[in-house]
Length: 263
Image 1 (tube, rainbow, N blue to C red):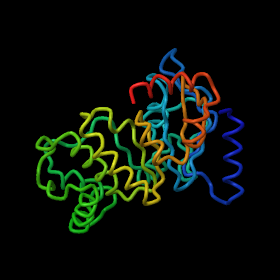
Image 2: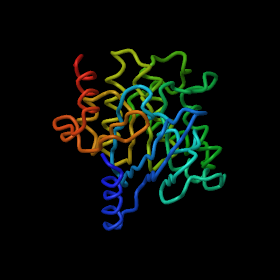
Image 3: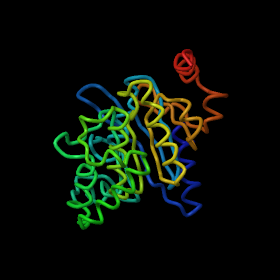
């Protein structure tokens, strides 16, 4: 999809008096001489669920990591909830309070119980009383269907359970936006469905979600829009029906033929 087409989406969102939850405009990033993001324009509306797909090395994970400044972009503008990402630490802290992120690797603290992993940030960052944080954590562990694991340590859980803990931990901060960076890629095949089921349920709550994944069934079921990236560019954007059933570009057609071959 062209930059102008996605900027047109931005304009229509503005007309509807709904500023984007996430906005990238003319974003470029390099790792040394490697140009990993090339003039990326993308807007995600509040409550929208966007799935980002593309071949390895296409810039998907780098883009999503730039949205909460785990990576720093060199050109262009990124704004979250209307706050532009800059070197302003206070603005960055404000953004990170509103954005939850789930990674490929679960990044749980191995020396803390599941409950302690979930309550650490609400207590220290949100200044939530311990009792309230524990009640919230148990409520969210029940939502991801593992409340009975609360007093166990991460090493005692399966990989699918650990990823569900990571999702619950992110939700304990009451974020407005959830970012997922290939959340099932490190899981055994039998564990993937249990994590995707939790994400499908979360999508049903109206949470703004941006998900980098190769799980095309999830994209069809959950996404409002699918973004296809290749070689650092946003190549095509559309509804799941448009992207999967009527791809416009040869690059997307080739990608779909490769990824759907085994399904």
